[in-house]
Length: 221
Image: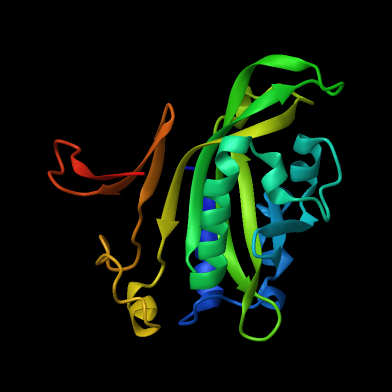
């Protein structure tokens, strides 16, 4: 995680999660994440492939230029990324893992006319239990990686995914829950796999191997 806001939100979520797969929605105290609150949002899984905005922070609403409540989260992304994001969001709700994403947003003026350049951003999505024991809510945060250089009043339009990482906060817990066939964690607490796109091809990259050479394991998709 590159941005202090995503690091802080993950630390808070992990703290209240304790030894469970996910904390409950009502355990989230806005006062505890006041510095990140404007950039956060909550999604509801409304179907197999339907993820709708339930709540959005003020900066999220401003950057997208519209009220996102009840809108389709996947509709904010380019066509080529929706299937991949749907896969990740389904895994977050089904397995209780987290997801870390980086990407770019095209910039538009308030009148929706295109502006030069793009804005790189980081997005973290974390599972929440709302009704019963099932995970049917997702807590997210999206933050520009170079906010100081972002012109005032510009809006995001057409998000594009650059990389995606699956984060397993507690490998032992997931093993106890029956996910023992998954790769051994690269770290005692966190395991990650990155999805990297190059042209029309996608690669799943497992970091490791020779530390100094930057080698890793690459699985083609």
